[in-house]
Image 1: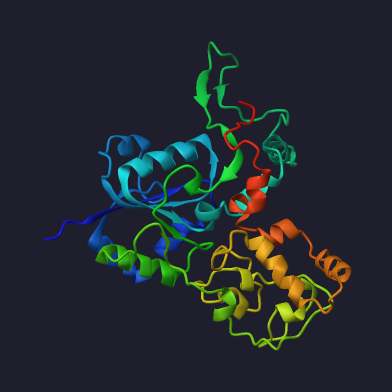
Image 2: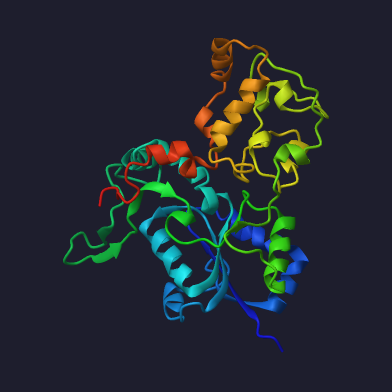
Length: 334
């Protein structure tokens, strides 16, 4: 009998949705269990970091890492799993591109912490308290309390590839169930492509998979999706709703646009684009019903929250994100 594979999954700075998405292959979980043993998956089973540290290098056949790299613990475990794994997969938009957590890179990390801890809360009595890499808990003094440690928060959010070599990238927020199962099948069959590569995604854009019809209509203004009732069967962009479909890699099957919701870009840049946001601004420039540069600039300025719209998932790995990241290794309040 062929030896079973050893699979692992780790969640760094993410929402946990990627862990759930692996379970959403439904009855195919039985096929995965038949072909592989779980070597490490803290969200599902009682594994400790010490268990991984005790493994020989290369013990894990394939490791999925989801979530961005936000703190010292994320970076340490990512590097540890790289050493212990034959194949390392950046699973989901946060791991691949920094994801929504990467939008925090628009602000100094101390400002981010202050915002989090000055928000009105009924559970925090002393709002002057802030997390630090080391602290004393209980009994009121260093002599009588218990020393505890917290992972230092990094100055910027980064992708998995910024701290460890990545063999494959499986994008999405979370990756589509069909694509996850396709990748699992390829792993079990030993049919993954040569690395590095993007897997579980297409080579075109979301627009290529979208069912909504395009008529070449140009627009004079942009609106948010809740401000109008979108017409069915008609391209959302041609209705003035900013949809990231033209600048986003295919693979999701156009699920959002199928429900008349604009694509937010979770599968990352389409084609060979290095900057998803810049590519989308170029698309909008050709869509506006004017050839006057001032009018085009003014119309694009109508887009509310341009950073959150054009770089919702990819700011950390974009050209803009790299320009803003002065010192990724800086730690807050260390």
